Length: 173
Image (tube, rainbow, N blue to C red; front, top):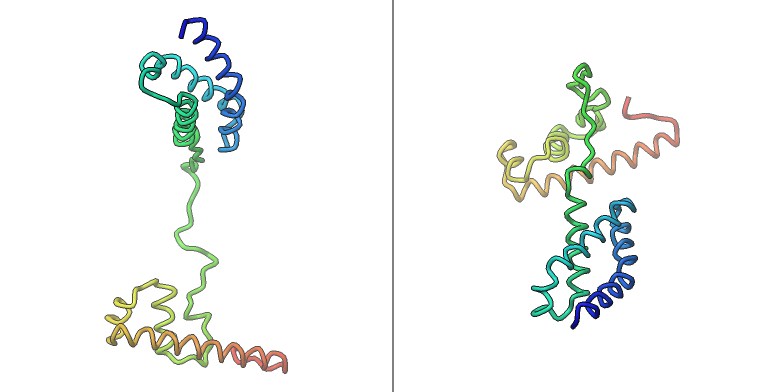
């Protein structure tokens, strides 16, 4: 290709792909001006590397699209896209959540202590079956059985509570 043909080819490539490359960046959540810069950067890289690419690369438009995609990924991971709001030095962060109630206090009084204990260990303390088994001196398999029974008992208590509430009697107080 002569220099004139290469220039026309590049102009045609630009007219054909520039708009869609910008749209690709915008769909990824990048602002329009930055999207235009990314597209221009991709074309500049093609110009810089054209002499080495034209000999061995058979799909230069594909190379351009892939390069633009890589530049989009780089932009999305760049530090300028990470927005952090610094806390003021004078701001006191509460040590304890004021709205957190222990699970044991929320469980109905009719639930057995052993079932309360296993529900607290599983859901509040987030312990594994192995850790619960060690703490309660039972086997891991029995932990699953006890959890199932505790859930069933809890469900029955809540269902009976709903029936009692309909009649005006409260077992939780």
